[in-house]
Amino acid sequence: MKRNDYVVRLLGMLKRYLLWFVASVSVKTANLSIPYLGAYLVSAWLFGQMTFLTFVAAAVVMTVLLVGTAFGDTYISHRMSFGIVKDLRNKCYSKIERLLPATESGKSLGDYERIINSDVDVFEWFYAHILVSWIATALVLMIGAICVARINIVALEVLIICSIVLIGIPVFHTKQAEEKGYELRKYGGELNAVIVDGILGMKDIISNQYEEEYTQKLMEKSRQFDRSREKFLNRGMKEKRSTELVINISYLMIAGIGVLGGEKDIAKTVTLLLLAFSFYGPLQQTLRDGTNYGFVFGAAKRV
Image (tube, rainbow, N blue to C red; front, side):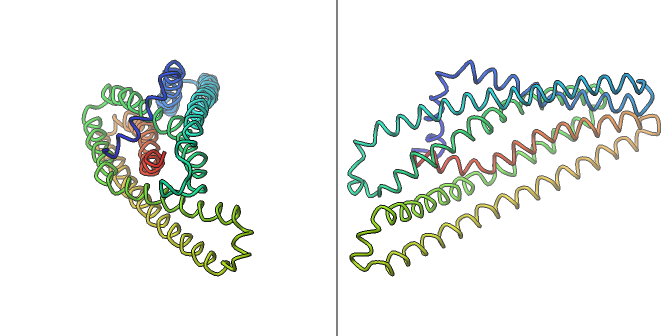
């Protein structure tokens, strides 16, 4: 089975929650789009196109909308994801009799406990944050592109080129991310299995004087997990530094477009920079969450 097939199969759990999913994406898109309005408001006030009282009133309304949509996004997305996780965990429990005794499949009781609890819980984060955010971000980027294009088409070209580079960075490392994510979940499951089996079999360990061997096994699994986690985090930090570098270069290029345009374009330059900031915010957050897709893949494969 291909790597992404594990995740695709679990997307079938969305069927019962399709309306919740559509509502979650809609509210998330509205929430991420509000900063574009803020960019226009700040620019209009700075350059005397709006009175201070009007600016304050508009800012209050925008803040209320931002808070309201943020609350709605949190409530709807988690109501959906918790329901899906509950259904998925029930399916796992329904299969447990067919999977036991654990020795027949090479897995311990502790490993099954890790899959049913920890690995399934990963999908709450996937459904509520990654999947919804990816779709909402795509819609918001299209809205932002339209806003920028209305002011300066060259600035839009800069945003598009830099966005392609930003998206290409994690895509280029997809296989490595999935391998590291699966490795992290695998070693985490093995460590958890040793801990749970040790607790359940403590009496036998003591009576058979197996304490030293058990401790050595526990320490070895712990070291494997720590090394795997370090590799996973280092990979994520490298991607983060690369994306920040590309974004900062983009800001400099947009500012340069304004300078070359002359003094009369200062207002437009400020607006473009504010729009670019609002544009890259959702994209950067989505890419940051995307670096953990390997973590989700690892959990999906185990489940």
